Image (cartoon, rainbow, N blue to C red; front, top):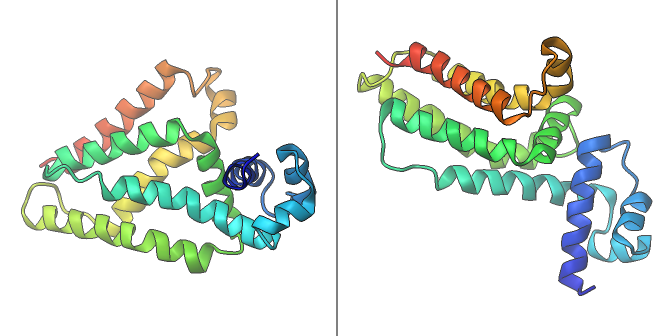
Amino acid sequence: MADGDTKARILAVALERFAENGYAGTSLNEIADEVGIRRPSLLHHFPSKEALYRAVVLQSFDEWSSLVATSANGDCGWAQIEHVLLMAFSYFETKPVFVRLARREALDGGPILIEELGAVLLPMFDGAVDFLETEMDAGRIRRYDARQLVITAYGAVLSYLSDTPLIATLTGDDPLSPTALAARRDHVLDVLRNALVP
């Protein structure tokens, strides 16, 4: 395996393990074994468990941040909000490991949550708040606390996808089936459209 391939494989396996078991429950030895290398080879690429975890989390959130940064399509008001929400649903539905990692990071307060992750997410959060306030000032959407609105939209998308075992128990259905995902998307869009469109 080429050096770059090994590093990419380490990151991919570590993402799965950290998402599944959290930071404390993940072992570098297990990651090395799954990659097919020895622990010293893993440490050649990442000098510590914290360094590997930091790389995994930042890479995952950087990908999401880049997608959001390119999502502006020139629309205003509800059209742009709907566009971003649909993009978020599409992204998170195809990245269940990212969803689990994001939720674990938020719940566990992982070792980089406050510092680097905040630096990655804050410009995105502020940008969304600024957009909403501009649209409210222009009368294109109803006035709400924009910061709370961003948190509500985030939760409406991410919580459903992270809580699928509980939702399956409550509904008796597979929450990740195409029909259930489409129903969830339609519901969230309908609720927010009715709340926001004047």
